[in-house]
Amino acid sequence: MPESFYFPIYSGLLTKEHREKIGPALWEFIWFISKTTKEIEEDDETWGIVLGGRPVKQSEIATEIGISESTVKRNIARLKQHGYIEAKRAPYGEIYRVKNSKKFKKRQTKNDLSEKRDRSHMTERKTTYDLSNKDIKDIKKEEEEKSLNNHDAFQKIADKFIQRRARGLVLSKKDEESINRLIEDNIPLDKILSLIDVVFDEYKPKHRLDYIAKFEYVEKGVLDRYHNDKKKRSNLDALDEIASKYETE
Image 1 (cartoon, one colour):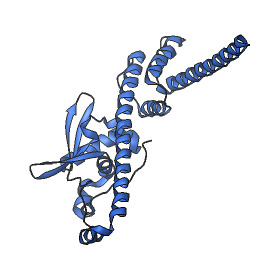
Image 2 (tube, one colour):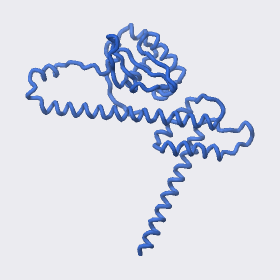
Image 3 (tube, rainbow, N blue to C red):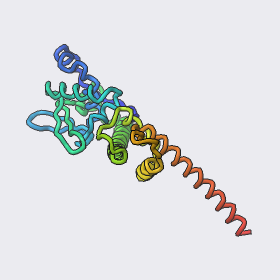
Image 4 (cartoon, one colour):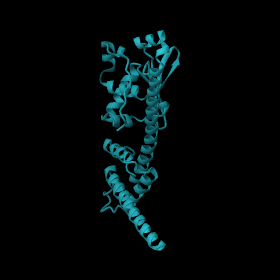
């Protein structure tokens, strides 16, 4: 589950026209706004670039907001149809941008006007404001980097599972959830990939229709083996420490 953070949404969306056009695609639209990392001007229009312009799979969106991939696909088509988003196909998903996202649009407040009139008394407040902005940028940067790393890890794990399963190229929603859980366990990616091979290599099918069909089985196998190895290494380290102690004596 991604870390929570605050982000602005343009109040102009709260009209009958937008409600009728967006309809059930509201959650996907909010997701796109939340993932907007920068805004650019193009032909007198402001476009919000989603996740720095990296490709996004619809399964990733479905996992984060907790609905089926088919529903996400249908709702994204609705947002495209009414011009709220644009998408460009890429090898691993689509590159999205949001029309008039206004996520980073500066709003002038009474406080801003007061600062213009009397900046000499606002030095301390300005410093606090700058620190706050820096904290927000750091949080956003960490969230974007984590999202990019998780996306890369997800794709490699999914490819490995599909390759070893050798039965179908589509993951179920539960498969995707299992992969995401494993990523959140902070096990090194190369370790996960090698242990997936071990799970498949050690599986003994009872007949020709007996095979590993779900990633949940692999998830448990990886966790069992990883933590067993970790415990063994810890015990060996303890023995080495004891042996070193006796050698010095």
